[in-house]
Length: 633
Ligand code: GAL
Image (cartoon, rainbow, N blue to C red; front, side):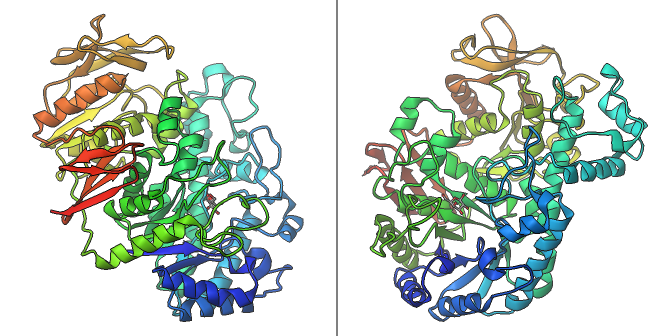
């Protein structure tokens, strides 16, 4: 497959005379994709019903005739000001009951029927007009669903829709009362319209109620996106894409992805390191200008799963961003490294965000490939270098990873609703396992929680999984490799109530969790073989073999068969040892990597990337900081 580069462009930000020069320069630098339109509603429809699309026709024509393929965005992330006059109650409402205001973006509630209709209307206008346009080669729905905490809204529209959703799901309030245990604290309902959203309660709401609301809220994003997808499909054969974000778990991306052709995500490694990671200062200093060595790869692998194999980076950081607590410049070479790492993980295309820095508004301090005065910014040369390298490179290839790691959105919601200890974060535990495996030089696939075929893998891990789905359970029963399940996995029903028989209730494993403890960050439980358990420890009664235990004798790694249970959250030392032992048992060859060096194999190449601040040795070479190395296999 031909891998490609591109850029995000805002023709509405620049005088029309500029477009053609911009397009020519994009092409000269080896870019082939250009994404436009996703925030331009106020210029497409300046007043209700008055369409002005001739400028967009011309922009598409200029870009297309220059040789670029256009990705056209539906502009629904930025409803214009007049929309708020037309639908004053379309604004999302925060947990405190305050409407979020106009004046930035994503100011809509997914449940508002009036806005849903407007979203379908503008989507259909664009789909009809550009569905067969030869230059429009892909579509982007909306922009970054859920970004800026916008999945959940406590509006009246959400309340009514939630009540309908509950009525559909449970059919009777008796069934709902039973499922949630509403007898507790006299919370029984006798009609669905009595059920409020789970905010502003005196103390915590019933966790089953809160989790149901999270499932509903995710479903609203899926439904919103599906409406656009259906309309676009009716008028166009071009693939449909959405640009997801980093560490965003509030809606089920697999469910949104099921209605689209390609997944993509917006990769801002330096912003994410400062803004979205809980690592210590030493780690953040070491990687301040490179980004965390595993965060990007994790999302590449996650979105490959969400896209059922097809995925892109829709926005790639090109220099300092504007939105993190501090915004350093990438080390020279990183804008090239990030793109190559994405290709090594199977990305079809990588687009830099954005072409030219805007001299105005919220993102005026955010770099582009060009400066605001049209001079070249440093990332342009790096992008051009990647484009030249791509033309010389044979097929990058794909990978059959030996290891699968389950990632499940509902588990993230469940443990947000019921953390039980402040340290228990679902994304974090999965990410730490991912990082541990990457440091052993392993390639991984992220697996959805309903994966029913594990036959391609030797090792499958599922930390923190709310429930074991039927397909996963039956795949584990016949699994030829090793499955490491836990901590906390399969500990609840999908309603967030306690199971019987008691967890972990795994195929082929005689073990019962009698209670679970959480503890302070400074009170780790040391392990007999070194390292410690943090945050969470299950107390397990078992007749199975115990290969790891705390110094107090609590079983931690349980089972000698294919399915093993991990009863706590291991620290780095303990995790490394456990992962290495499992790999050895499965004859998975590991390549322990030092510092910020990471590798990725495809069937045609072995790639190495140095995220570290110093040179790293690999394969008899010294790879400089920000260096990319590859050898044909
Ligand atoms: C993304 C967003 C872009 C832009 C960018 C800035 O999250 O999709 O529109 O705001 O961040 O880094």
